[in-house]
Image (tube, rainbow, N blue to C red; front, top):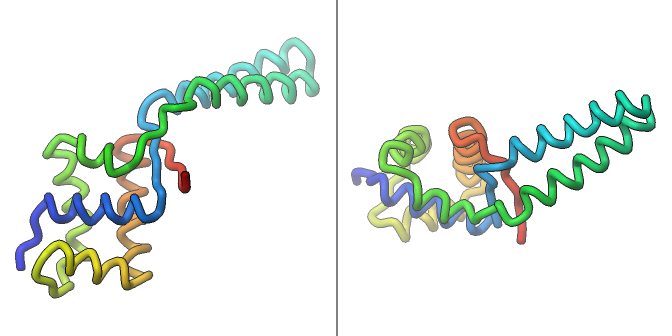
Length: 141
């Protein structure tokens, strides 16, 4: 059966929801930059103890800046433009093309019942989110 892009997106949504995946696409780089900058400034002003204090302060400030920026991965996937969904689809189809299924419910059951397939598809999703979207990923509620 031909595999449609929408079916693969639904599968990724189910998989990421089951794993409790959230991602921060914007502002995560700013938080990291702020933590590094404050550690640097702290080092200039107070030497080695200043690095520790500046890094801690910058880390807290960066965490505060990015708090609330994490969104559920299914929401991010459904908001992707068709060209981006196709990129993710092309990477996933390499794994899914060998499976025999009739509908999305059966495909989801096949994947969720096989830890190896889950891990391979999760790796594809994580690589896409982190490399293509430059997102930070978080697990659990």
